[in-house]
Length: 105
Image (cartoon, rainbow, N blue to C red; front, side, top):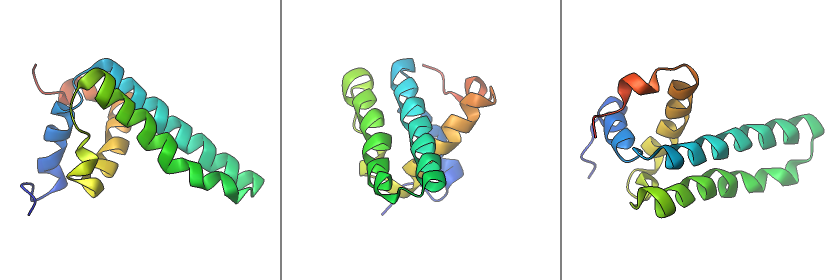
């Protein structure tokens, strides 16, 4: 049973698990590469590249957690909320909103 009843409840927890800037940077790199590979696969119609998407996205993110954040990725307990939160965190970073949403240390 989830301790979160909504994504709005989950997102502050997710951000608290991503306090390290290097961890967040690796998330952004992975997410950006996912977008780039997806666009490439669609426009080139080389669908074989799509199998790389989970490895790219999760690989960079998990490296950030294990090497810099020193915690378990939220994906293991909350896979759907975590996937959505990755994209929301990237959007918040790109739009300058993340600094206002990060919980205090």
